[in-house]
Length: 233
Image 1: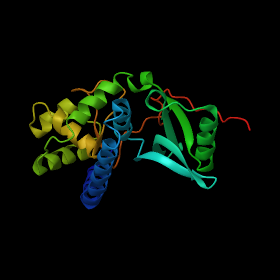
Image 2: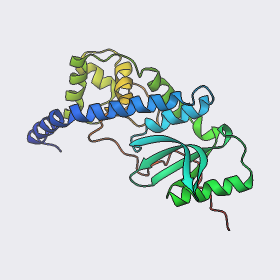
Image 3: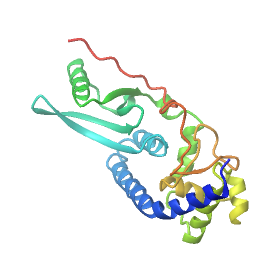
């Protein structure tokens, strides 16, 4: 159990780290939103999957790879790619959202990704639409532009610094907000808070600050996509 001294030290560290950490994470979210605009008009499902990835606390970075160099040429890839501490770089082939590849091009893509040490995982619509994660992410992302006044943001930070794992309902009671889920959702989208998206998001959802986030026991465990074996030859 944390002592009063631990909480005081945590508060001092948070006051020191939060401004730069917050700017970095908000900047990353702006970059992701710009990334989404690149293909939202052509692939709503791909955009939905990108949102799910960026809201996952185990994934610090998401990119969209249009192509990679291999054998003195640029090979079209057109995949979302993430960086994880446990799995390294992973590219997701969303099967229903890309154009048809013949066997030669599919083999070339696999060799290109292997050359760049990027693991390839196949994803289908069932993975993206799996509940309750799909609905949770859609709801949370819908509040991404909800305004959170600075005094309220500081109150939430203080409450969760002192009580990590506080539920949304208990947090609302502490900060005097009847239903703080819009504010919580906005801060999740900004990279300040995390919650377990594998259970329905609601008043009983446990919350943590990002400097000490909840981590799933196996990263990307929620994704049923399978790694594609390399072709021979």
